[in-house]
Length: 278
Image 1 (cartoon, one colour):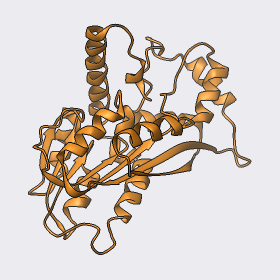
Image 2 (tube, one colour; image 1 turned 30 degrees about the vertical axis):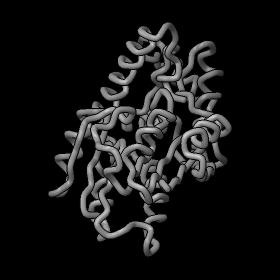
Image 3 (cartoon, helix red, strand yellow; image 1 turned 90 degrees about the horizontal axis):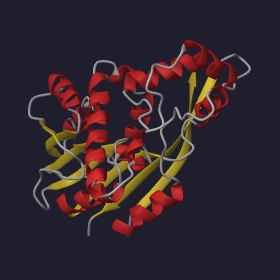
Image 4 (cartoon, helix red, strand yellow; image 1 turned 180 degrees about the vertical axis):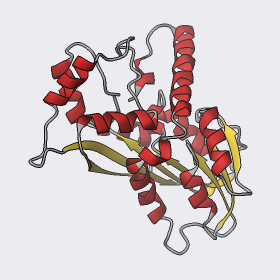
């Protein structure tokens, strides 16, 4: 999982640390609100894969009420609002900065809410579709989010979630381990086995699709810049407190494997979760 899986200690200390880490995540993404959409190649690819599944006739009933959970700047919230079957859309995000940015870009009639995905301010059985693109991997325990989604969906309602798995950015992780032993620089994610067990523990009939996505970059520094522009930097407890020295960055670049043409590739282990409430 991401940074919040690293919390240790008793129940009170865990709750306090979890709240602090959630605030850190919200602040990090909020700080990236003006650069997020220009850097979101992976986010658009994975979200479009879910949108594609909504194109078949009957997949989304007319008059549907939709929640975009972890809406970010509202790119897919706006896409969902433009679908003829959709009567109402609400974009929800933990980051006030992201919601502010989304509201400024949004079309008339979209609702917006700053909220924790583990405690949604929505009534039971109140929506027909929950669409969540690359959000759940930042949560301490996906099961809490899945339970909330199950609660707020109506019978027949659909859940569509994308996430990242262990092995994501493996090239970057190995380069940093060679350049800066003993310090982590890349976020941790669930293994496919662990995520599958947790999903099926809450949503027995859910289907999970996985694939490896490889994106090209001109250099490791461009990958690092993209992660920074997304607000997706490393947030683990092991991170260095000071700004990474230029020498360490150069050493990381030296260890990053290059393609024959001098470019680099970054691997993302992608997962999509699909479930219909009976």
